[in-house]
Image (cartoon, rainbow, N blue to C red):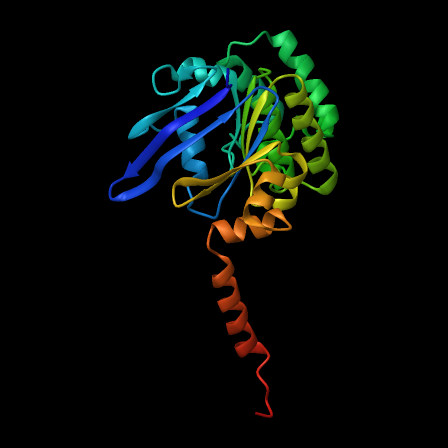
Length: 261
């Protein structure tokens, strides 16, 4: 059974059709990369899966449960990191994580053990008692990641989770995601970083104009579009190759004009 299933998902905001029938599944053990340009529908899809917004039609399910019909259950199974996480900056990192665990009604002894272990992994031990407002962007991202993991969810929904992280921490996060998948979890990973998607995603869906325009393994996508890299695949399928060529030409005219002409 898919841990994540999105079926004919549509969402309209006034006259804007943000999602136009999105379909995909993420099975246990998969890291599914959802790639698309800004405004393509990635974040709207994630928000619908979590139950933060109600679809206009279609459905999103976690472990076979409709997010719109049983959002409390769905949220208990999901670890979510937003592109711009909302944290209570007046609290210390420790107080915030304890607050999150209390909302989820978790056993505090187990939570403290998990927080301590993840604090060591992310080198946060010396910062846990500092107000979140005083932390760097990277440290805040680490707090958000730990908060998404304290309840040991089966499903991770990650919207640009490596944003603000240094190379070492990014590698640790990638290893953590691989381990989560190997243990039978499912991950929906939204990113603009093609290299990351190439390295860790088992399957990739490219969303453009509110629809999935291509889906498959990296090799399937490259073969299907006769491309050498995921970046080439992405630019072809999102019709951005010609636009880039035009803008490169304009740059040449603006900055490298032959003064002798």
